[in-house]
Length: 138
Image (cartoon, rainbow, N blue to C red; front, side, top):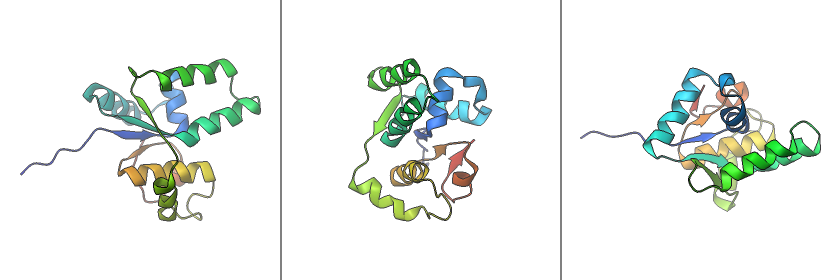
């Protein structure tokens, strides 16, 4: 009996941004994972906390409002690959699977917990998340 692995992945906030605006910043493995998911029609999931992070960066003047709007347009377009995962009680409860000592930043913990909850690898360059024991691609 053969088992197939779904090419679906969860994209960290920076992965989403770089895939849209600066794809050259993605590693070869990250690009491949995103392209493989898109080509197979598999979801590329994005935690809703990533949108909150981006809004916060706009408010701090570190991310352009026009870029934020462009990200929202991609996420709202049913023809594009990214699928927003809402923060609900189930994936919030998955936070207990990500030790605060390993990933102390709350948005990063939520994103990591989302990947753990979905049982999918997280496409991230974040070394703390990579060291936390959840499957990552970079």
